[in-house]
Length: 93
Image (cartoon, rainbow, N blue to C red; front, side, top):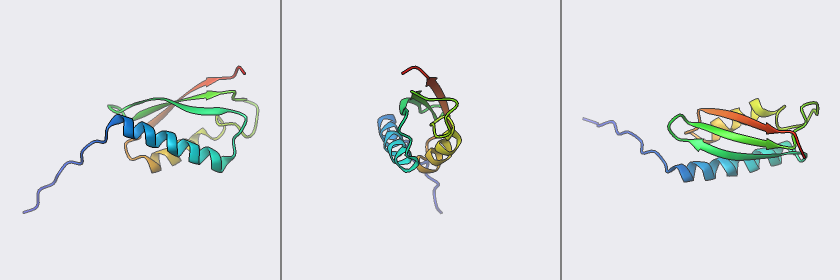
């Protein structure tokens, strides 16, 4: 008889480290250089990451805000614990 075991949750710091690493990788691929996209925090209870965008240009074609749906999808594929991404934007430079 097999016993189903519940997978242990990774420490929050490990998940945050992986999110930061994956963000660097994704932004390198997209070549978004005009703005910074940083992890503000991760809520392990809800699986929600809050990302902060600095220097975003809402009218620019190649800003992180424009690509956020793709960035969110890629992060969810790469980080198993991630369920949602919230975005805060600071357009000042």
